[in-house]
Image 1 (cartoon, rainbow, N blue to C red):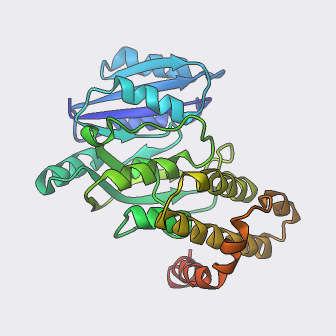
Image 2 (cartoon, rainbow, N blue to C red; image 1 turned 30 degrees about the horizontal axis):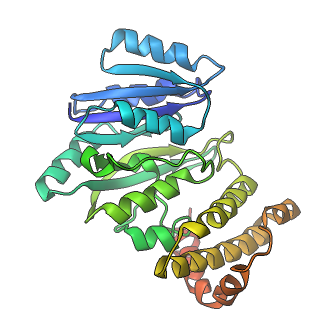
Length: 296
């Protein structure tokens, strides 16, 4: 078995079929798809069963609702492939993604790779390309011009065998996963192909500005205690960047409700505020790259 594709699903009956079709269209045929139903109350399990009945490479596992992290862990525990591909039930992957990435990873003998991706919303779609990603960037720039959706990555199973999602983290668990994996990997390569398609879903955790802002602050505050040494300084820098992003979102949306997303004052709030003048450089760079150099 070459690739195990793990698909956590909670009430995504409107999109699950599209995700599974993108898997079946892969030019690499040696794969298994593990749909982990996370206590859905809609037709998601029935849709997965229909696909599994006609394609023996597709399996359905069911569990009580516990979040996408715990669903992905169940998939990891049951995966048999040499490589691991995550795919959320409301997203898709390009037909040649698995073939291109497995070829590149074998040729260069690496444990992790990622592709470019396209973002779709109700009004438009646009491609995104990040030439490099590493632990330092994931620590200080994730969400500020260096975010990569989890289904753009492909991992050697040997790399992630001992890594699991923390099921207690219900906000930005993909970010936490990226930090863990990139800290373990010797090298992460970029495969220059648009391999992942990310659909912004209003029901998702990043479906609105308020959800996004609240999720970022909750995760940054929650993870601060897990950081040590220079990583803690980098995390304070990331918090300083998030304060700037909060200010910019308030200016852009004129939404006073964003005020409710600000975290409570803590001892590390002061050093983060002191780092804000330096962090402004990163925010300027992000703003220039996103809205000026490549306007959408």
